[in-house]
Image (cartoon, rainbow, N blue to C red; front, side, top):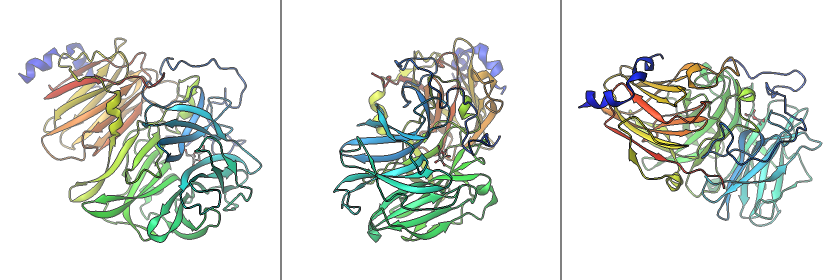
Length: 510
Ligand code: FRU
């Protein structure tokens, strides 16, 4: 039966299915953050309003109407609203003029773009950071003020704050900025959270090329004291700059464990950017990583999930979003008039694998509200006209390949290697446009499935310019951007799935 069904899958594609970094570019005038494409960065070219329907425009992922974005910033939930601030260039779709753009949502999926929130001042550009709700008015800006904590990036990187007393609509910069003065050129991305057990604010800061995370504390968000520094003795963790830290507790079998996220660039799991995590304990002063892991562990094994952090103030829920790009080629990806999207939001939890905790990501349950009815796709026709979720159950005991395609013969092939229990995605020249950057085409992006048993169920979230592949338990994730001429809408397989079904994901734009 398997063989017969298998034959029904696009036979023609079967033969081809088995076919299977550089550092961030540096402009000496702009420092380490120069985009490789400055054609529109800082320019004044007028850009037509968007109907969110351009070629490659994601239909279920957040993008700004126009212009460049990178890291998510200031993730905070307040009064029923999720705030998503982000690194934004108000003047073009190359990196530059770093400001905080802003979008709001009640469900993490339908976002409304708001006006630009924070723009550069005498202390410098507005780099990455976080936001908190000051419930107890510790800072004196008012009860429940939303306080943003960000890096002022001028000749040095220093930490500053701004506050909102109108629910996040507008922010005033604190006149005592910077709250942490520094002469360092590598000292950024403050992630602040309220540490209840110690009744204090804790801030994490990344030291870039010094490969460490500093932990500071404060009673009032204004006066800060350094508590400790976290480093890794594993050389493989120190290949690139450390950026965008996040530290949070998660339950593991009834006990509390702390997870430390560190974005690193280069040195990621593929090449260029990636997000490591460490599991350990936090005593209010110091994060200590458990040593029984083979670090680095990766939050996502794909090429395009960077600088991700989690929302503050979500009462127990730990929801994450990342920048769906890679500094290797971020400035060159063929998206216009916007450039870059965020991942779908994911809930993080610790699950057990081989007797140890493993950080698992699953798409937030709100994604269900975008989803249409499941339909069988045993003939290989997904029948999606735009974004969709494909679910397949495959054996783990034999090799196979699944190939996504469109009518123009762009292909995204996912091969499973049974001996190593790894999935290898071909994000190469056949996926669609790929020649815009020399290091974009990568024939083998690979990940362990991190799960036992004779079968594995995979969920693929396919949009116009990305494929997010997750095991159904969240034990492994692989996020890659792709630029096919049209969304993939066919599937061929070398081994018949025991389950293959698809459902549309409804466009999130008005
Ligand atoms: C990470 C990062 C941060 C910095 C921001 C600048 O992608 O380099 O460290 O704050 O981008 O845009």
